[in-house]
Length: 363
Ligand SMILES: C[S@@+](CC[C@H](N)C(=O)[O-])C[C@H]1O[C@@H](n2cnc3c(N)ncnc32)[C@H](O)[C@@H]1O
Image (tube, rainbow, N blue to C red):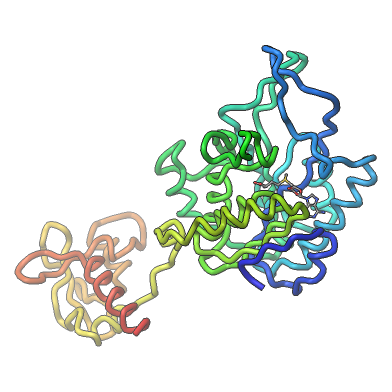
């Protein structure tokens, strides 16, 4: 079952799915906000926050029991390499986090979503709540979960070129992105920003993976998944939300990109010197040189180098030829050979060979 919207209750729909069939789960559950009465802005107009029937619980025990049920199902459904993200506010994250740990999930990160345009605290009775928390967990301690580290780095617009941190700055969903009815009212009180979901999916799943959202609302998760070339299963109890979400999903398609494919994280294929000699990319007896073009060493049939009467691998020989204290350095960063009358780094020649090898592999 893939690319599906299930209009039903997660507590009864999730048990129908196959065990260990899901790569990534994103859950934006009812927060149990405990909202009561009308909330007025300072100028007197009514603010429509989350006061929906689906967010009502009668006691902490009831909320705990509900949370335990859906989190247990998520655990059953996740592949061993899968991971789960849950977003929540102060009203629910502590309960959810405690239950996650009791169920044996392994904490990867908690992320602060710093809302750059938060709703003010109209009454001025406490600090303005300007963040939500995302808890990211693996199925268990041994899980080899997907983390596209270099993709995350590439997406770090706050601090370009640096490792992505655990505070993410995004505005709340507003403007054209916010789904509205014919009278201009919000269709859903808690629609999440698409950019947030795109980041989550891009860094913690692979193209073709199956993404499940058990509380899908307007299908923001599905839309992000589809744009990034993942499959989706969206469960939502409310028929209207399902209909709006279905329209949203129809309107988008896969947008191919290096982020979608996590190209930054694709490990290059391992190649050896003897393999490249056999393919004619290097020649036995040719001179290996430093960047200044001084001939230093000579290539042997087994891919090692003859240097001052010694036989050394290219990395040890590189450290020796450069007079470094380190025993070994990456020889591909050091050695050059002559190609078409000019110095060419052996790294660039290895890249040419990899391109050819990949082409042959795919053919
Ligand atoms: C916080 S909202 C999710 C919003 C969504 N992330 C979005 O961007 O539109 C939670 C959703 O869960 C749905 N819901 C609540 N309990 C449910 C249940 N037991 N099964 C399925 N859906 C449920 C609600 O109708 C609501 O749309």
